[in-house]
Image (tube, rainbow, N blue to C red; front, side, top):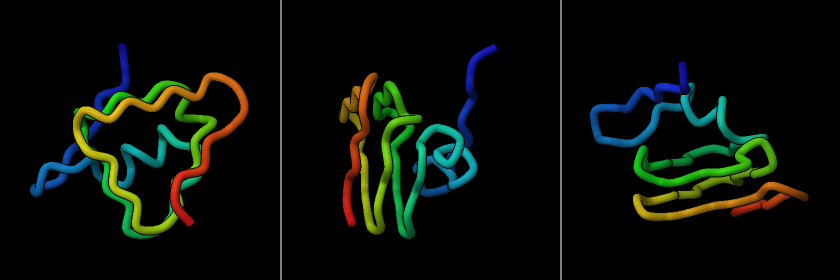
Length: 68
C-alpha cells in the first residue's frame, strides 16, 4: 500500500502529510497534492515555501534546501 496524503479544505496537503515526505519543514509551508516529489527525504523546506501543482523535485543524492 502506498502513501495516501490528506488534503486540507483549501486544497493543500496537510502538515502531517508533507512532514512524512520531507527531511525538514519550516513554518507556513504549502504543498500541492499534484506536485511530484522524488527523494523527499533529502529535501529541506524553509519558512514560507509554496510548491504548486506541476512542480517536479528530484533529489536522489545529496540534498536540496528550498527557502530560508
